[in-house]
Image (cartoon, rainbow, N blue to C red; front, side, top):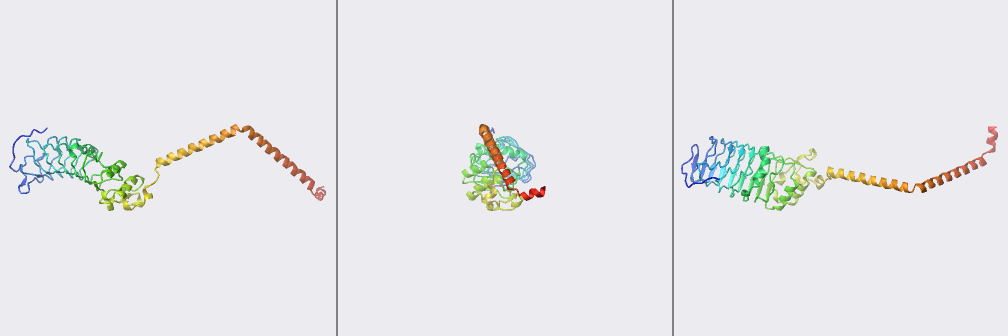
Length: 325
């Protein structure tokens, strides 16, 4: 917990520029390694973009024991690799946080603890694979219930990193320029439940095959939720490359799965086997009657052949017999 004390800072931090009329403190290319926290009490925006802040540990904004009045915090392009638990403690009024274009490898589940007024969170082009895996836990924080806009563009995400939309009050989710080939069925269900949410998905390499079926139907029925739906293009398979997802035919995505086909073949084999067993059982139970029937047929064929043989001998030409002699 950050022990706040009653003190006020009025001077401008070194290497920074302060503009009281716009309530902005700008620290271009900040090189001290830690975020500047000795900002004036009147400051509502701290711009420390392009600096050299490699990590945000617990209480990173509590070093001087004061509670900052910041509303906007800009920390993009700092090379930040890790965000620790309670890193933003001491910023209770913060509404906008920009962490874009850093190199995040680790994000604590309590990274955003205390940011109850946060409305806009920008994480564009900043997530490594491990940080992307940890992000859903951090976004599930109760502190983010007032978050309206979340930007995750350019992170090579293959799935939507949100365990549920219920913990957030999102109005806009930006997932452009990632590696999404499809949208999972559970995500589609959640999107359908939150009609006020707008999702931006352009510049993703969608695979326009069976796995896109749920998302395709959602897109057709809830097009207003995806404002950039006209820019959603197929990347696979090759025959549909460049085709708009919204212009796919229903049969392009509604096809039987390989598992269903395998189950169908197995079931067919079982049915044929049962029919074969029943047929053999019928033959076995009627073996006596079948044997008698076969004997009757054999006797009838023998009698018929004898009749033909007798007629042949009776009808033979006597002159042919004399020639033979």
